Image 1 (cartoon, rainbow, N blue to C red):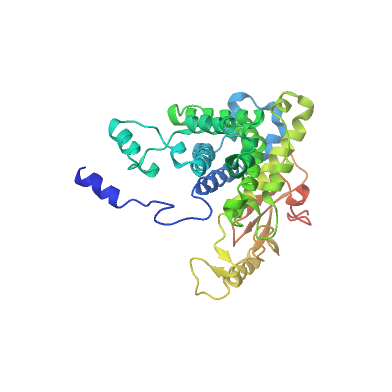
Image 2 (image 1 turned 135 degrees about the vertical axis):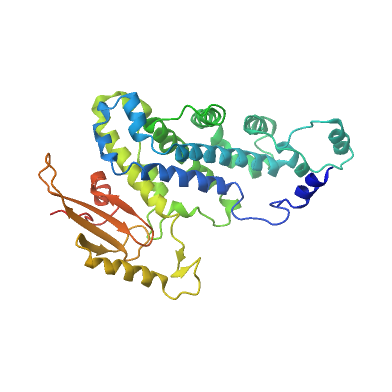
Length: 370
């Protein structure tokens, strides 16, 4: 072994050997996936209301106007796929560490293995396709009355349903196209259908199946600091891909896409909050950081466009400033626009996408009405 390789080998971080993590390490990929999914709304939210006329958009104009930043779509797909791949390998590893590795690539490893001198963590792990094949084989190999089935497989049987397999196949296909082609992405309609209608329900089932391994951990974006059960809200939005072909359902679909936009904006803010229990993670010695943010927001009363100051529905701090600005809109009766911004978590929307109250996310109207 050359000196450089030996240097890297001696300085790697071996998770689960040098230290353990809760949640398991693959949940970092889930966090990345959701973060990037939430960000896909941010770049287009100021013009997103045009989706209400969904039937007027062609394939080309839909792609150009609503795709958003490519990197957010790319890293969302890659993150979800990596989470699933690492989960499958972890399930296999719980049964037998050698089920998650390649077997075996060279003669030296083969002899070391037979002499019980080769640990599983010294062998390269398998890729997704092989992991899923072995996962399916495990259900064929182990009897339903066996300890292995009851302890390691039973809770994940839903992953072998036709809908789950179909969902994971399309996720894998798009992951491969992104990695090996790079010229093709899902447009808004396909992307939202895959994530909101296929993957999020699957992720919800996985989290419930993983409960005994998570030790009361729940991804922070599942519930906001104010108690909004964000994933439940996503699960409540339902549509099918066939609905996009029916003109009579276009209005309902557009409203559903707007609702998803609102939920993604709320989800995005959950990644911005570094204050918990009025203690700042990055500035732990500052007393009452919530008070500081609220004082900053209070100062906006002097702004000529100030309309209202209220508690943020995402983080709960009284730091959400609502603005109203007079503007001449020739084609509209209303002569003003309204928007808001929370100076704690950065929750921010313009009235073009509808009031959060319309989507039952706020107990009263937020934007200026007159």
